[in-house]
Image (cartoon, rainbow, N blue to C red; front, side, top):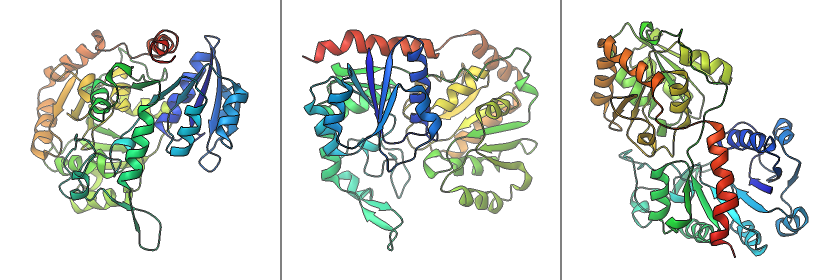
Length: 388
């Protein structure tokens, strides 16, 4: 089978792109052919092209698809309405994986501007009261206006695709809420890299380090975790892994809260370095207020054997069984967050029990083979039901 992947970026800097790179590599081992079309005006990286049999910048997409002649088109990050229309004209089966909420929120983040409340509503007039039409940019004014009509156009053309793939039941319900045919939606949970491995020699319970891994942006809720740290046992420190637009704000906020040396910002790290941070932590904290479509960092931590405390937003409860392999908390609830952290710190037997559960139970078959095999099943056995 020949798969044509279409994605704006051709680099390894984003989660969607890392997924594409790893999955193409796995499909190569199963003798699939993969080609790539990408936006030449977006980020590119030579290494990204290595796994593809051929790769071309998007120029005249209809003609290029005719020339490549794939069996299936697999879209990831693509936002241009006219490109979608040209793709659909080819009459090829077209599948899309939805990695984020960009198609389902004017702000893209799915939490309200003023109250910062997690949003699960359908895109509509209520988005204006949340100021979702205002977008920060690099213009002289610093802002521009998001268009509801353009977002609705993109949703409409996406509904015409052959099949949809998402990483969680939450995301499936969110597509169905936006009038996507639920019979055409497949849930295929994401997988962590094979670089992350558990070790029976790791003693997580002896650690005095809490861990945050993610983009340093408001939706990830790091401000809630920093504020919680003022109420957490002061013998425990927090390591923050990641970078983002609000990095300087969070560093300043940490100083404002007088957390001093208790918080260490280490920036972006490699996967090998990240595994070392997972192995030396007491638990991973995921304080997101934006609903996570799945949250891969939690899966990485679990694969290494680390307990997770996370807000109950989006698809997190798909893999986090409250009280079994970690704990769920309410988004934006500072007291709930620091109480759960302190409970896990104070009760070492509970911590050991959680670690034991993670090491001895399988809550999900979250490995690459299972994901890829299900993907192949969708391509070979399900697409034909909808594509004539």
